[in-house]
Length: 253
Image 1 (cartoon, rainbow, N blue to C red):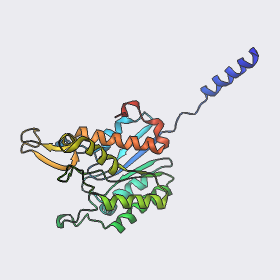
Image 2: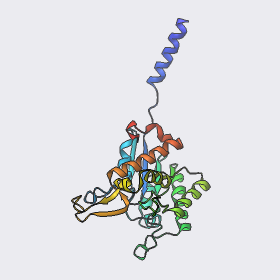
Image 3: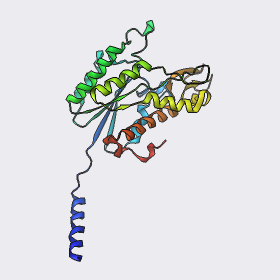
Image 4: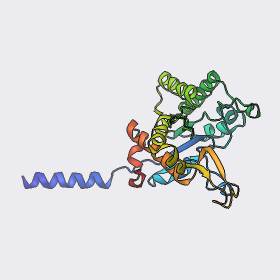
């Protein structure tokens, strides 16, 4: 019996010594200004992709390629997606969150506007070309804006585009992080006044970069971006993606 225990212990020690360490993983983020790393002169504006980088162990590298003002259409036409696609390697992840600029129908945004059918086509392009490189696509619905109705209820401002993300996700068997719904739940829970602390809602002379103040219903401050990043991480855990084991404990809300 003692001899058997010795061999079992020896086997365990040898197995541990020769255990293959986890493979390094790269996460690519593509999207718009609500995701991207913002210039320092725009602080405290912060995309959720910036704090997202801090919640991983040493085996994960985050490449944030999101860019302000981009829709799926312009991200492709400017060659930004091609640059990412050419860099992908087997086992990489691509998290894609677009919609804010795709849905912008105002005349001044006509160069970025993308009708829903074209939006879906572009998402399918991202998915297909990601899989062609044996990388893993993950869809993310567009994060909510700070818009309440007269009864104090958060408005669903991305309805058509979030629905399109889900349609593509189901059709192509791609995991979907519903950041739209999760963020609306958070903002609704905090309410119209308290949730201002998530967004760029600045009074006059409150920040040196914005001496006249700023009332921005789309972009987050540093705290808001961190809360949104934590929602994304919560959904990654919920989906049981392989990435989950690499999230550090400091990612807890």
